[in-house]
Amino acid sequence: MSVILEARGLAKRFGERPAIEDVSFELHAGEVLAVVGESGSGKTTLLNCVSGRLRPDAGTVRFMTRHEGLKELYADLSEAERRFLARTDWGYVHQRPEEGLRMNVSAGANVGERLMALGERHYGRIRTAATDWLSRVEMDPERIDDSPRTFSGGMRQRLQIARNLVTDPRLVFMDEPTSGLDVSVQARLLDLLRSLTRALGLAAIVVTHDLAVARLLAQRMLVMKGGRIVEQGLTDQVLDDPQHPYTQLLVSSVLQP
Image 1 (cartoon, helix red, strand yellow):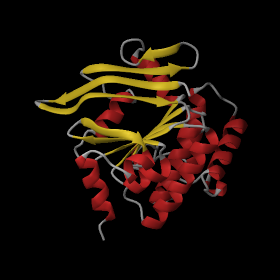
Image 2 (image 1 turned 90 degrees about the horizontal axis):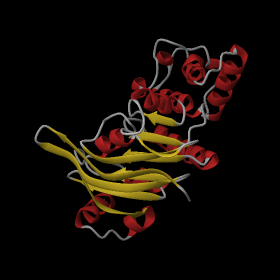
Image 3 (image 1 turned 90 degrees about the vertical axis):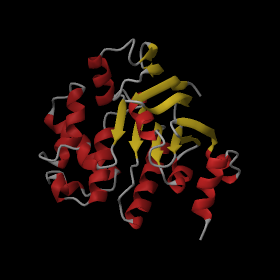
């Protein structure tokens, strides 16, 4: 598999406190990578640095563009080019779907807006694509004209996923995508995410504190503590035979009755 994203020596500080230090990893096309760790471990800062949302203080992030090969996000691409990637080749699924949706326009407009960023202006094609994607995320297409404010939290998250995937991105960033939802809603949403990533061949980085989410969605995982990667490897291998004491503690705390 070819590398779609490569991070080397990433570091970011907030004041005197290091949020991440010397973080390096690769993500391959079609691969789902989980980043796990307790609150404050640096996983969300890492996600923001590799998704172009937060410039690191040191290190490099290179993305395999469609036509120009590997490009360093902050040295080779302008802010406008990064924004264009974020609207087209990337997706970003927020923990709180309200942060990833436009709450004052309809469900269909939320999905169609991404297509318009690619230059689509034909109303019929936009509406057809929006209807199709509402169905694909298991939402009632009859609600295409409804406001996201009328949806439950789980439905808003499904709408945010449809909005992100309608442009056929190759890489999706997910920040605690099922956190805060009821257990039954979480389970259905995780099944949906797993089926979509596999069917579409998506590469994804999923930040989560929930090891069950990591096991269900990701082929590989990184374990972070204090801003550093303390263990990484195949998800089942790391969870079934953790080597670092911190990973062992995480796994044992989940397994304890």
